Image (cartoon, one colour):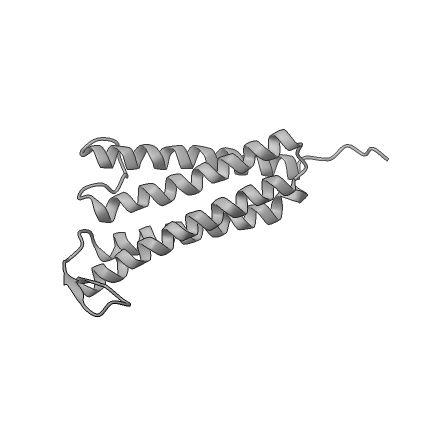
Length: 156
């Protein structure tokens, strides 16, 4: 279980890191320029996208990374074997990456929110990533609910 927890925590940190990087894009979008800190100066450039798209992309990375950390803490109490635990971990990891990447498509590429299939290639890509994440997380949480809420056989 320790290796699975480390896998979740490591991917959680990386997904959060992506969210932090997108946060710089959010700040530059709000400023209407790219600050070169710690070097004095800036580059006048308005990043594409909207306030809501940048905020969502930034928070998706941070929140999905934190969810992986929470899953790492909860996994030891889920009554499941090592193979099942690894599968559940990967379902959550796939969800976190899919959400973080798909939500970043919206501020960077016009018409790429990913709510429906079609339109631009980037929109369809975001949509497919969201579908992958939704299927993975709904399956994983259903398995956890089933394993934790079903009556346990008394072995004693």
